[in-house]
Image 1 (cartoon, rainbow, N blue to C red):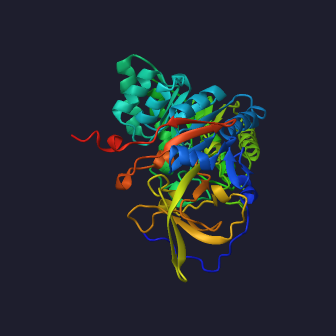
Image 2: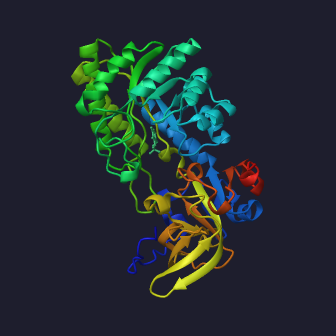
Image 3: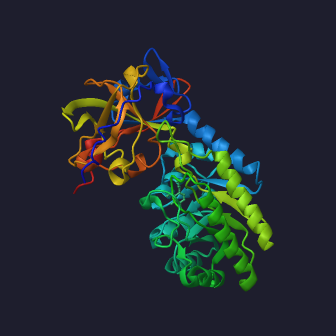
Length: 451
Ligand SMILES: Cc1ncc(COP(=O)(O)O)c(C=O)c1O
């Protein structure tokens, strides 16, 4: 797919890097015209480690994790924050999540294996996915994961059988599709009725399946789960979803005589990808969710359940940035200016996949105003291969180091080897120190498995 037509009326914003506001990682600063994150010079880092390069600001990640826990636990003591590892996961990230006291959502055998290899406590792991294979279920149950979030009736039977074979009782949630239309891109909207995820409430299917779950051997249904979508700005959608979920819990009590003790409301809080974005805060999200749970439970006369949320993007996206080196410049008169970087849809597919966009800066000109409108295209064989489309940037030159902000979520985890591109390294920066936590892939990593 080609890029959307360029907006010829768009003017540069003349902002300097530090004027990009909420898009910047916590420790971003400019010293002598150069971008520093975590006290580390991004230009030097790019030259030393090569580009494309993923950089994570550890202080930013940890601060947001602490903010989430504080926001929920001060309002609702019996609550957990579960980090959705699909947003970003390597062993170091799993260690930080464990250290900060969060739980972990994994969506496949690979994410579970990474968490366990990093020493993440299995009992704090929640297992998701709409088509977990029997093998993945067996691995999860054998490892002693805390909860399996069952996504279908077929899976319920599988979990029951595997748990019986292993001689254990597995605690499960049922993922419900609450029929709430979250105000976000259709590709990342998951709670509406036409969704591959979860038990539909159409024709009362989900409610009828609760009986199966309550009766299934070797399975203990302890709670319900929903996730209505991602990058959501309008908090009322979360309140609506709570109302549906608590209503269902009340019916389960009334008809089946069972009070479920846990409710997981998923993730989805939006973040600022653009300097002018005004997403809701973590505090506001907590307030809306907690208020809705408390008032719905009171209305239905239900005891307050253990409440959890599963943020991914809002924990790690802003902590991350990607560094690239400018290789080629092409100005197409009256069309657009292409700045070609040494990565693209292989390290960040979001722009090509759902027209995401980002704020860029030139790390070696970070104190200068962004005086041009450019498209940062990648190096891949697709016309739609771009990371940034029609955004302001300082005047670019060959060999400049470009930093693209807000790439901490759904970039590394969605990366590919398209065109034989080795995946970038991941560097965590903190207090003036940079440590490589995942090394860059080599050609041998790409083709060494070939027989
Ligand atoms: C089940 C589930 N929980 C949590 C998340 C995290 O969502 P976000 O990154 O928007 O917070 C997702 C993302 O798609 C998800 O599918």
